[in-house]
Length: 175
Image 1 (tube, helix red, strand yellow):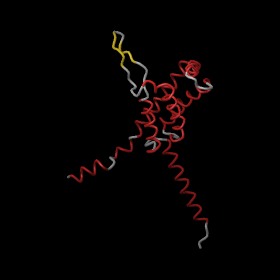
Image 2 (spheres, one colour):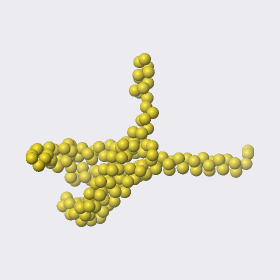
Image 3 (tube, rainbow, N blue to C red):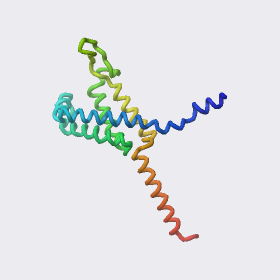
Image 4 (cartoon, rainbow, N blue to C red):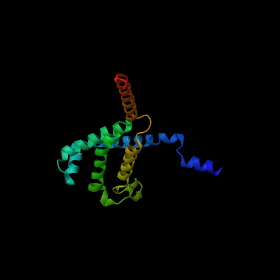
């Protein structure tokens, strides 16, 4: 009995291969939402904020950030080129940590008061940025999981490589 329990807990459950899917959904949707929010307020408004905190070329950086959030978020959501798009996405998160969130500490929730109008919160810390970074690292290291374009591309490359090897072995004369 004990051996069976250890086997169940120490081995991966069949459902474990689905674990990357919720990570892709939350990271992808989260980045897309942040990109759309910046786009809805206007890239100039975001550029003004970037200028205020001393970011060089604020208009270029505003548009770069918006595009990274929208396109990177979509790529992660679809499980496409996750290792590649994670690099600029991680850069955006690290810049946010060190230029905006670090002075406010770790916690992303700073409840200041509860009034008749509702809860009043202070500025968020870097907790959420670290969670996004951890999710991206997990997806890069562990793979995009099922229903991912990366998996389809990998299968096609493996199939094409096998086909080439088969053709080449048939073309070679026997020694």
